[in-house]
Amino acid sequence: MTSDLQRERLAYRRSRARRSTLVALASTVVFAAAVWFGVTGAPGWPRVRDSFFDWRVALRSLPAVAEGLWLNVRVLVVCEVAVLVLALLVAAARTLRGPVWFPLRALSTAYVDLFRGLPLLICLYLVGFGLPGLRLSGVPTDPVVLGGIALVLVYSAYVAEVFRAGIESVHPSQVAAARSLGLDHRRTLRLVVLPQAVRRVLPALLNDFVALQKDCGLISVLGAVDAVRAAQIESSLAYDFTPYVVAGLLFVLLAVPSGRLADRVARRAARRQGAL
Picture (spheres, rainbow, N blue to C red):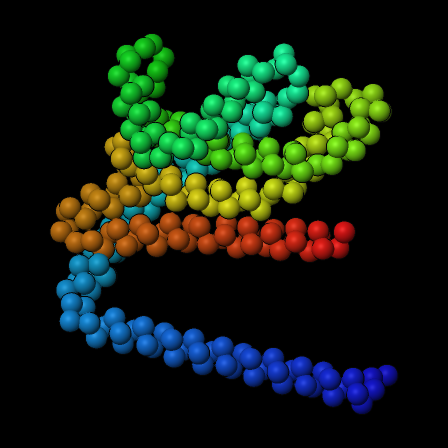
């Protein structure tokens, strides 16, 4: 049976929740109205509206931009898998102990330092125009492949540091316990350390891949006809910037679910750590 005191508390909480919802709704409406009237009341708004928000140009350019976005999605999926594999190998190499592994540690450290410090746009130019310039047999010339290689090289350096932080966060007693059971270093890393490390750094990994979704649009600088390049072509044909707005909205729609997933995973990880 529910007591009178409990019913009063429930009623009070419901009233507070309703009031908070109404206040949030009212403040949102007021803020949106202020932004709307502030923007549309600007002297240059009619010209901006015609140049960036032309519905006829948007509908005409949408199929081409959406087709280009499909290329970005395919590049994203392939690059994510390649980044995970390469970053994990680099992180594992950086955690090796013993003087015999010093050359491998030094090489992986130099790789991380180089590609974390190198701007992605410069890396795209170096890979996209430098590799074909060597004229070596077997070197790809497709701008999509070259752009994907540059993305993998840069993002693997960032993700490798995320993996390394997760590996080093595992308590040494876990490794000692695994070695006492007869597991060698490779099996200890695969069966004991990596599962815990990946679980701990999963929110950070998801955030890196959300950033990768946006940066996949930079392969357009090499000539790949992705969403950004398609928007540029449509914009030059229509003498209007609306196709860029269409491409931007499509990228946002692609990134929002990933961002919400990253936030949810981060909250679950925080609750899990708080319960321990």
